[in-house]
Amino acid sequence: MFAIIFIIFYFFMIRPQVRKQKNEKIFQDNLQKGRYIVTNSGIHGKILDITNNICILETISGKIKFEKNVISKELTQIRYGSNNFYLEKKDKKKQK
Image (cartoon, rainbow, N blue to C red; front, side, top):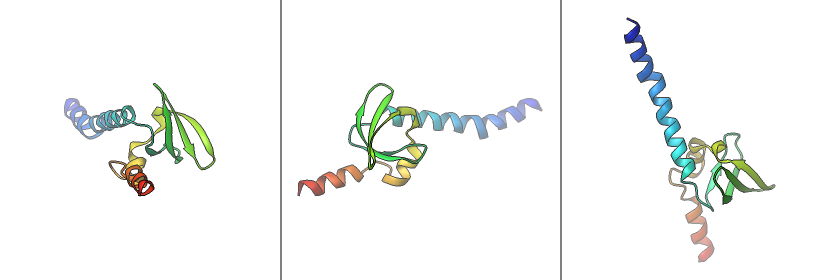
């Protein structure tokens, strides 16, 4: 009986959370300069510089230094789309 409860708990609670954390880590590792992102606290900005664990964001109020792990994949995709095409569209308009 306990084994069945644990298996159900694993497939409905633990496994989806682990998968979400893996996807978030992959997103944070693939960040590039110039991309627009949203942090977990809701701050929007453009990445100016990236080191191992630190990102420098340019916001309306100036430059802010953040840890990479506070950048939210979910909020960034909601605001700027799944592939972050906002940067590419904006750069193409400047070139014309």
